[in-house]
Structures are given as structure tokens and as C-alpha cells.
Image (cartoon, rainbow, N blue to C red; front, top):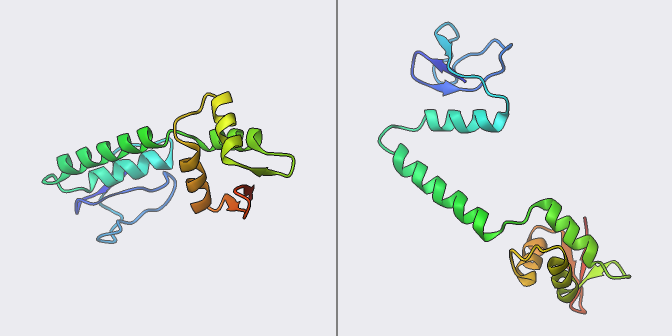
Length: 138
């Protein structure tokens, strides 16, 4: 993470010839910290550029949002793939019953089968069939 004399923080590769996105200068830059991942850099730059007056409010809102996201869903993409592959019927479709059974078998009852299928439908991973089943698209 680089900081310009104008007060702007931004990310850049260590071997690049960077310019400040605010004032377009490259002579008044100092390296603040190095990060191993782009997501860590993104978060640090975002926090560093937030005005002091609102940083505590923003931090508390982000913390509560992240907490609710983790507690509401709790299924990873790997979990979902396992559920769907175990729930597949001979015709390669899934039903609420087969999804529920696979969630119980895998001990992944972090949400209802109905909610899971709703999320999968909205993300276009499954397609609803007329006979109360779903075709898995991915």
C-alpha cells in the first residue's frame, strides 16, 4: 500500500512505476505496508481512505454485516456441490426430499432445503422442472 503526500492511499505492485490516482504525482509516494493478497490490500486501502469522522460507524456496520452473512448462510460452494451430488436422482434431477436427505447425511443443516434451492435458483445453478424437481445446471 502506497501513500501519497496529498493523503491518498492506494495499492500498486511493488515493481511498477506508480502514480497517485488523485494528484497524478509519482515523486511523493511512500510505501506503508506490503500485503500477500489483493483482498487484504483492497481492505487496507479502503479503511485507510475513510475519513476519521465515520470510520468507527463504518467498521461497526461492516462487522455486523459480516456476522449476519456468516450466521445466515454458512454453506460454502464445496458444501453445496457435495449436497447436490449426493442428492442427484437417477435422472440427474434433485428434489427437496433428496436435498434434505443429503444435507442430513452430510451434517450440513445450516439452512432449510427450501432456502438452499431458492438461492440456487436465483444464482442459476438449478432450473425448476414442472414435476417439483430441479435440474442441476453446473
